[in-house]
Image (cartoon, rainbow, N blue to C red):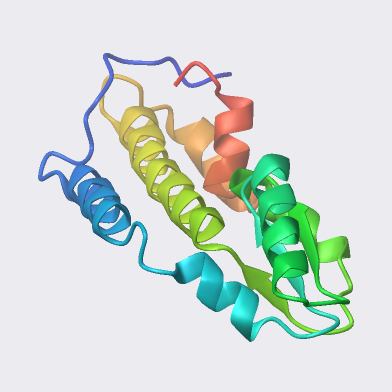
Length: 154
């Protein structure tokens, strides 16, 4: 038995997600050209790895590291929505995050949180409620991420 999608329910009627994203974009805009990357390069030490949101940005950071005479510091590009891929990294020093990676990671988490609210609202709304399915999912210990895989139409 599957959860039948009702009309899409907007779970965040107060706009917290939109406000958080707007605030993040405003902050990113006013923070441009303030020396964040230069500061990151300056604070990096041999053995550190700087995580960037893309391979292109990682190459730029590597160039900046070379210009600053920093040796033994690496830069890698990883999509922020796949942060779990960093678990295999074993830097000799610290794992440092470029500001673009942090911003994109937070944006992704805000969007995921809104989607989770929508999933729960849609599956648990009267028009879609199927207690045996919901109870079985909860009993099985499924996390909301698993629900999206089981009921992608929601």
